[in-house]
Length: 122
Image (cartoon, rainbow, N blue to C red; front, side, top):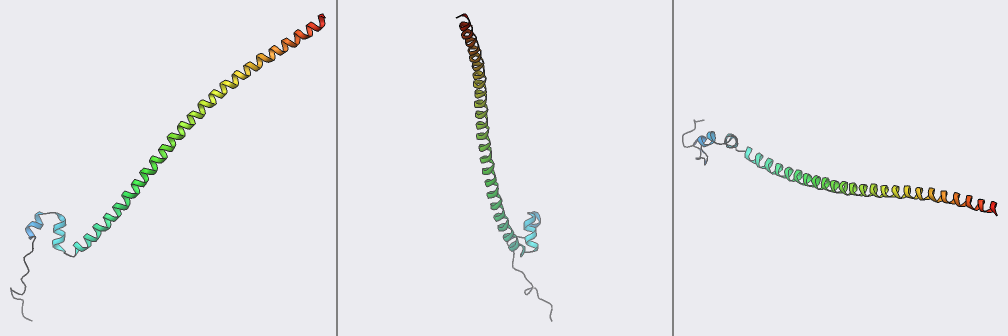
């Protein structure tokens, strides 16, 4: 086999020169070294984009869920506070009713004593 001639081994002039590659980004250097890696890189980029969209959707769903839980907790806090205030009000009314009941019992006892005394005098 004859050694290749200059015309047979001549490569087409690349759009990106080796100088541009060495002074450029690492991605260009990688692509210059292995042009097939570009196909892998594009599929990887698309895969990453898909995963990123999925993660963004999950994050948005989680944020929405957290906001809903926070709103429910705030509503529950408000409801709990209302229940506490109502309970306090009912306790005050119960204490007032007990006080009135005690006063009425005292009046009944005094009235019974007055009736008994009036019967004894009569």
